[in-house]
Image (cartoon, rainbow, N blue to C red; front, side, top):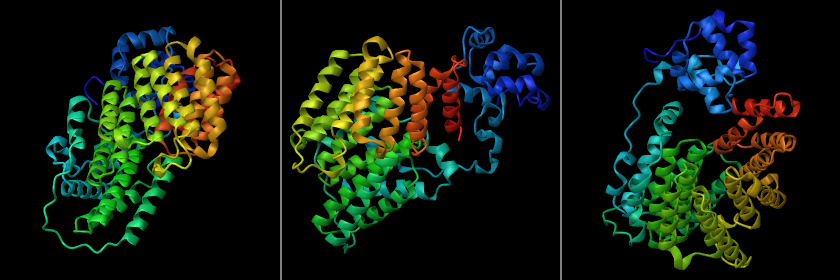
Length: 484
């Protein structure tokens, strides 16, 4: 805290019955007025502490504007040092912050500009060894502080991926002879597949260290000179493990580290001549950019995927890439582009045959997935034009829910959240509250930070309807889950 930021409120202020009642009801007009009166803080000091403008604080106190964002609620708790329990939140980090964890994290080779790392298989192995080693030995709290930064965007990202389009450079020959056989490689492939399927269903980073340990083992094997057939398949295993590590890191809000593992996955796919999986990695990076509202970067990444693997893409992968393209157009507000790309996705998926030999990892992309992602993108458009798009979005999301069910885990949770928002956008408050309850119950079964982030976007819809018991209960259930 700097000189303009107040310290903790006096215990007698927080012990007041009127303050506690206002806090638990999230009535921040009353909270700020009482803090001014009994805590002696000016509007400017409250604004500075909570990272709000003085004008915003004034409109909240006057009652002309309500605090509806869960993120802002957390900022107020942290800025005014209000214990989480008083707001229905979990204990805030500063309540049990350990000052002994201030050690500097070890340097990562990922700090080296990505475009300076050669697109050569041995450099890819070195990168994998360093990334996994630094992650596995670092204390979890230090890791989170060090790696949760923003991902690279624009030219700094795109220029570093240009090596994807050229053949891999030769590997120096001075390496130990390796002894891995096809059977061992098949076991590693089975393990990589199991991790990927588990992550797709449940999300979160619960098994992330197990994935990193397996990735480090594969990197160690590639440090030796394996037979060509073994080596190529090992690079493909590395690509899949790194892709799963990227998704787990992103799902744990470690955005910068997720991007580093995506880059590693792309390099490993390149070294293993797996152009199709490389295109899938670029699609994952595009999705990360779309969550950061960087549609231009996302389109560039999709174009890079299509350019590098156009001749070998199967219908399901082509369909998936078109949905990412449609997503970017939706974020840009380009309705015609969105519909065109969505139609292409449907056409490509219609070409898929159950007998086609496409990779196992794209099998999830079926009619349910297409309906779910299309509904999600229509929901993006509905936020600007609810009358035109909310009902369409709800129809597609219901189709996805009926086709894939609760066993879809993370996707099912996101569908439930999206459907609840559709109801709220259509002014169906009762239906929105009912779906919000279902969304919370689905979200409880995942460890995904992405799911919780999307759930947080429902919170504002439940504020301002305190007369409705069902909405109040929905608000409390969302708050309870997000603060747990």
